[in-house]
Length: 148
Length: 106
Length: 258
Image (tube, rainbow over all chains, first blue to last red; front, side, top):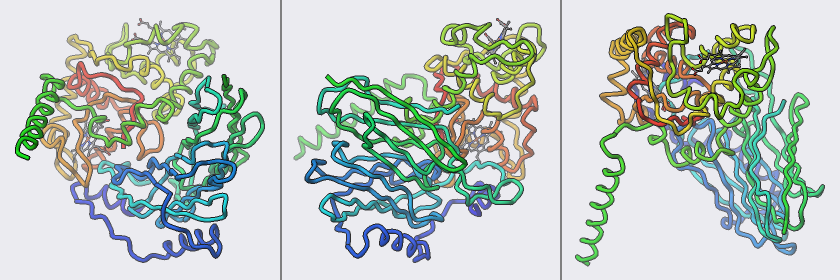
């Protein structure tokens, strides 16, 4: 919440978007992904992550994951996991799906404390993992609530 | 009293893939935020959302504190037979809420 | 190639003039138009707009008896879609027999204390905001239509004075940002024209519903000015002037704002 206080004090200041440093949480994200995929290496592709590239406020960011799949008994998406690198916890959500969904599309809204990369991993019924990602830039509101 | 808004079609053709959207009133307190007294506000989130169609689970989601306040979820379901879709939310502090919608398949 | 370029150029000119014709003489922009597509969609879809949860809650409270009279709003006002239609477009207003204007939440609190014999709900109380959202939602799509008269006009003039006066450590007036620099960017976000078209709003920053007063307080704090307490009459005066500036614009309650 430091940035919040900073902005309140200097309303007219230009917000400088920090570049993502190699942070400990990036490792936490990698670790959380390892927990899901085990020793497998996810293949990039089939997973599309839709987030607005520039969001006005990180507290409620619409996010949709779409996985290319026939969603049949023989070939479907079993799970979709979403991770982030800058929040205090790397997990965002894990969804369980099956052929009854007809389409492998899941939407929700997430909190993003900062500009960062989001990664989605899909597990298909053949035991393989697929991944996709998106970068989000979070700008902040200028006229903020007084700090507590 | 739970406040829930669900958007699902009342009728669907057999085999049609329909979208179900749900919104519920809940603070999704992360457990990482200090309150006015400087102490951390205890975590209070919805941990799990499930959807069943005539009793069979068709969708489930484990949520983390990164899900925004007043959680919104959308997913799809293939309409195979007429029935009731039950949406359930459970979480910290014994939170439990449920909403039912009937979908007629013709 | 040139023909295609020409066609493209013509299409641009046409699009521009079409947009101008659509806008007509009225160039005012609601905060809605300054939001990105994702947030506009969130506001437009009643099952995706989190503000609608509070409208739903307000509807439940509308029918719930309260206070020593054990009466609900519905007991006296019946169906809100009929009795409350258009009401929010003309607030703040002076209630019958009163000598000063009150805003919509103030009017609802009057009904609590005088008609239900219940306690006043404090500012930013969730039930109060939900009732206000429910009442204002009945005017969604209707043009703002402020009341006139010697007393209310005097309060409005006071509000305009506050709007134009420089204040705070940054020595800024509302007008410097919202009239002179509206549409320009400040810290990465567009400065809106400050039209009170969507209140109470679901502000993502708050992750909750909040009143116009709370929004104004945020701006006062932003310019490091003294923010009056939430029950100060200055807010009602300012609200009156903001509604006058937005006269004829359509109400959007519950709006979503960043």
